[in-house]
Length: 166
Image: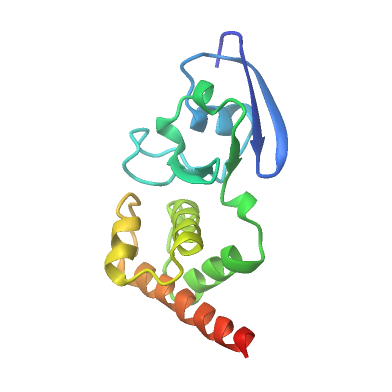
């Protein structure tokens, strides 16, 4: 990065300032190169693979397609910022239990996308799941185990909601 732009972001719950950035830097570049946030993966740089997925002001975004200048002042949540409790923990644990991970490169993007989807649509059907995950690419596991993992999270959470309702 070179230049003189300054961006203020709220990343994973912490205020962060980036100085000296180039005006054309993507949010992905700023996160990885300036802030050292390596949980956000750099793969296609075209918004097609989902490896760089973040929540940007609460909305799922491919950080490689967002200019850092456009994210100035925004709240950015990466897979690390989702935390290790609640839904994010359940998604991670179920991905492991269902064998929905192999090399792990795509996993952060999938976890962010799945957590976002199940926060908004906890009862999403299989077609909605496939549509929501269409922006994420996995070259190792295929998608059957990933869909199975998401459906397992949904079942577990439905059982918990039923228990809580009693």
